[in-house]
Length: 113
Image (cartoon, rainbow, N blue to C red; front, side, top):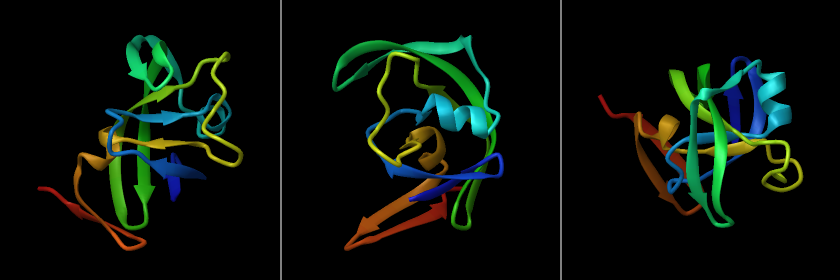
């Protein structure tokens, strides 16, 4: 899915099982998202437990769905990414602001407020 972070658009995988949105290091640098130890955490992934630096995206959007001050993780240097041409995983730190409906090739986000 095309997701915009701080005005920079990238390709993201929608991951309703991820607690936070995760950016590759390269995309985080383009979008000017800084990660720190203070906002990081040890997370459990398909490859086991890993430390992820954390931060916040000032603005994120998918289509007309927008959120501000979104918690994110940034992959570390030794992590390989999500596949060619994929800039991140869109997790619940963004999706949790919406009612998410997925069906037959479509994704609908409705504000949950």
